[in-house]
Image (cartoon, rainbow, N blue to C red; front, side, top):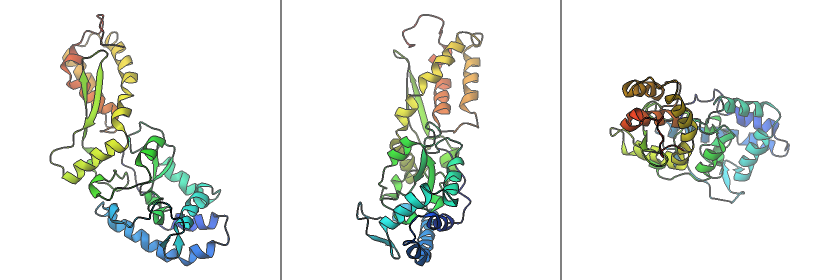
Length: 293
């Protein structure tokens, strides 16, 4: 969950470049004749952006490639424009695609950098919202896991919409809504969950819970735990062994509040939990214990 800047391209620019780079001369007049209709659809997208109610936008039916979507353009036309005019382009359209992708610095904004960027995700899936298939502000750099987790559907209930890295309110990215719990088991168990601030609206609380589920963050965060705990415990037994429990907690808290890490990412969430665990802060890791792997 990382905030990204909105791509600095006029809404229609990728459409224009995609049409120019599309290797289908017979289709170019059709796209150009419907350019204004596409621009009007983009206005609708940005109107719903003001209230984060993209679910109000009209959906295309699954399949039905010949269905007319915008002006005289079919679903098939609009998907082809993205797949062949943008992704497969060797011209300006592909340069814009790559520029949007590189803006994330290879850290997926949906999962806070757990996954590396694979491609651009259509926030509104092109299978259901083909009108926005080449709208730059609908294209979000994403890892393959998050991209697949979002799927080709989109909720009709605005309370279940995933977070939008470009447009959602700052509190989704600046306030803490993930938690972890440390259990003294064999071996140590750390579990992750959602705990949105109680002052948030029902809609906002529901959205982060759904986002957490869609991106499978509980399991994916858990998979990172031992790659971090093993060296940390090794340090506790060596270079950090002179710290008492209070000092060790302070050391953990520094990482838990590191501003360069996503506040709801796996690492800060893990270290918050470790710092809050009296057992972990005071444990003697030099003694034989079944709690370590």
